[in-house]
Length: 434
Image 1: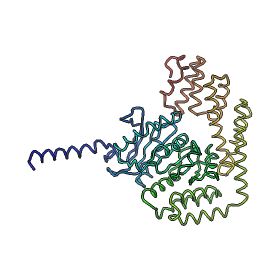
Image 2: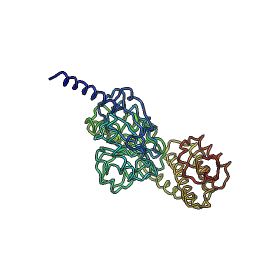
Image 3: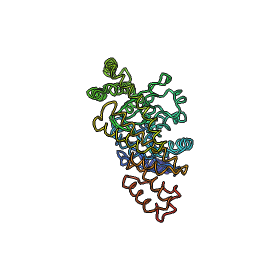
């Protein structure tokens, strides 16, 4: 080999070594072990994402979980699970283009090219892909597995599938996660328990509201990924056993059973003999009295939901306030029973109904908007959606002083997306707003 040729090969080799890390930004050690959010895609400037690569990953490709948040802001969701990502060596990314109000056809159209870009800039194995969605993001996740063949399993949090019939045709592993105070609890529970559902799934119910699950609960999904990626997991029952027994001590055999069965699903029966034995024991020990109370609570909740809808339909703010005050009074006396869980769900349901009625009244330019907003205000006085809509309402009346007051309240309550206010033409009536 001549000297010029050898020199050229050495130069080419040096360039190649430098190009790979430069292209793969998150293969660099200083880009790992830290959470990055609001990153703009290079290939599509309308797409933003967040990412967390465990420390010391290097260029080793890891299984990856894509998070879909209904607000299009995934970084806070990722933050909850960074320690799990480190423990199980799993990459976390959030696809922020997926948000409530964005058409699914547009989401799936942009998802593929973004996934290809992700493969180029991060040490992720996009052929070993998992998707976790919360609320509206769960609906999207339930559809994505039809269109993205790399998806191996899904986690649906705080909501059920968008189309149950189609979803039931799939056979990928799926786990539901739902809070005891989540207004979608009945929906998710009915899907999980329906005899018409042939698709195997697990449901983990945690103490909490309509939110991403706590890390202690969501670890089940990471255990599932670990098993699917590396094979059966041994000696992983300890945490789940402790969690399950804690629910039993609180006299909540329902939560204990959900905990055990979810853990068994994640680990597989062969790797969870103690959990299987505990689960069988719990199932046999649940009293007839508790079962009757559980069923009665579900029935009462359905009736109360219908009552809430009727109160909003009739604009009956007096009875509505009395209803909410009654719930608050009961929760001061009891915050851990089945009845308390129902009351938490009903309060959350009131917020959902309030948003739905107010949003429709605004779109229809209905004169009922003010009364509905006052009911919404009584329900959730610091809800930013309500405060912004109240501000828009006043701006539409040329009452710019009250419009500013309500908008400032929204900002103090955490509202930051000022760009979203541009869609409200009512603000044209007020100078320097928003």
